[in-house]
Image (cartoon, rainbow, N blue to C red; front, side):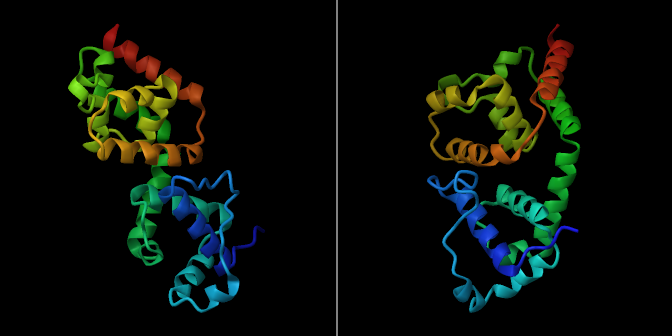
Length: 204
């Protein structure tokens, strides 16, 4: 039986993942989740009960996923937000999406390709504006997971960084993608095959 984590370990996990998603110079994997945290000070925190509650619900692996699912939704969450029903709902929704990600990816790609006569048009940054694929993300038609997978295959984000003139929405999304991608472990070839199939269905 895998033991559950202690409230202080939950606190450390929360701090490390919050820093990962909010600080450019902190990498959860590079620093192996280590952060400066004092056990004695933790005992006197007014929000300690939130960490106690989470320690009774999640094992370590699930706890990481729980925090990631919520920080991807909103990177600057307070622990009280995470122990609310919304935090649990975010996790359940995220877990369901991840479990069916190949299906989600195929359907999302299928739908956005339906709207364009040429595949390359999806990635055109005309006059420094957002390309269609990016507008699909902002509009909710393409999930950040599918976007990250597409970028891992096609490598278009570096071009976007050079050509997009807007300086808030895209940089924020790009930063989130960089931070989130290491947690999104997938069989890349499977998604290459799905994308290739969809391109062939729509354009050949």
